[in-house]
Image (cartoon, rainbow, N blue to C red):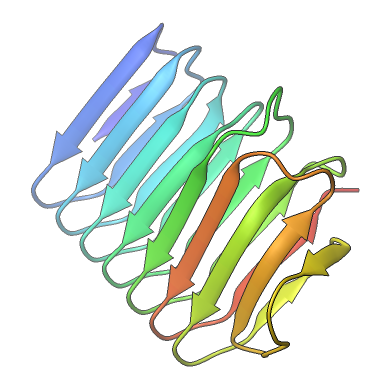
Length: 159
């Protein structure tokens, strides 16, 4: 399924097959039971999910939430006007988030088999553990929850 240049709200779902959405001005909700989900150039909130496949989201403004039963999650957010709650989870795959330099959130990230890394200075709560991270980035704000059953988690700061 391909959708391009849609307006205020896009809701796209398929039981089997990939979903590609680009150039939207409003919220996007995209899901598939089996296949890749790719969203590019969204200007509003994005919720993306797949039972089996990768999720790739590039937005000009967030927030974003994404999940995959088995597949990598890659998200790039250029700007966040607030500190919203966001959640990312995969049963098997890595999660990589590219976030704006001034990003702030209460973070809880964990992986069953892998490492959690961050480019952001973080005020850690609890003990240091390479597979778990709990703390505050910047001045805090919304809640950022990230999990992977098997894969690395990386929080990257945009240049």
